[in-house]
Amino acid sequence: MAKPPSPAPQAIRPKGGPLTALRNWFFAGLVVAAPLGITLWLVWSFVVFVDGAITPLLPRAWDPENWLGFQLPGLGIIIVVVGLTLLGAIVANLFGRTMVRVGELILARVPLVRSIYSVIKQVVETLASNDASSFKEAVLVEYPGKGLWVLGFVTSRNPDPEIAAGLPELVGVLIPSSPNPAMGQLVFVTPERIRPLEMSVEKAAKLVISFGIRSAEPGDTVEPDKKS
Image (cartoon, rainbow, N blue to C red):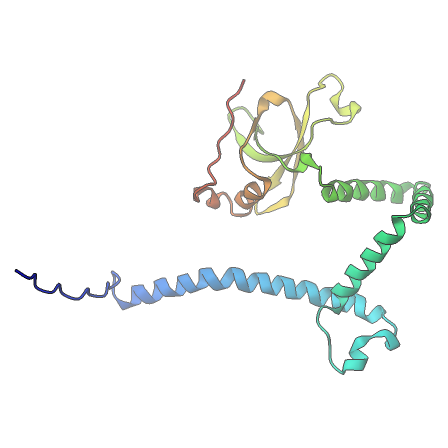
């Protein structure tokens, strides 16, 4: 005996009426549009800033905007990239390295400038280095007191001798501030007050930026290692 045809499935209506549906659709659209819009705005603001700072430095005869008759967005970015590439090619040879050393020797004779230049150079070289493992480790740190754990980034496992005097195993850790992980407080703690995390620095930074809200997402569970 043939079965009677099943009734057509009815559309699922959202609970709460049309106003609730409109509200849900609005926030769903906001979740999609806000990150994209803010990202595009930040990128465009950066491009406009660089163009405004670099393009006026070009001689009028070299400015492509005079040939085209309209503004060329991103021209400043192109000039910076090309200029840095050429600079890198120059300093890669013996003459360029010699000129850099001479310039650094001159800066080393200026009391305030040499300190600023030395710190900035060390930070940039560390960030640009592929083997900068000290910036690729997220940890939990027992700070500022016993039983209080905060997220941190290891910056150095070999502090200066003046700092490590009497405590040779001190570890330098940056305690980031939410929502800006680039700002924070540098602390030196003993290894027993640190718990390594099986978490990338990118995930840890997102936790700081989101005030820990992102920790509820799948795959981001913080699993500290057990103390030995």
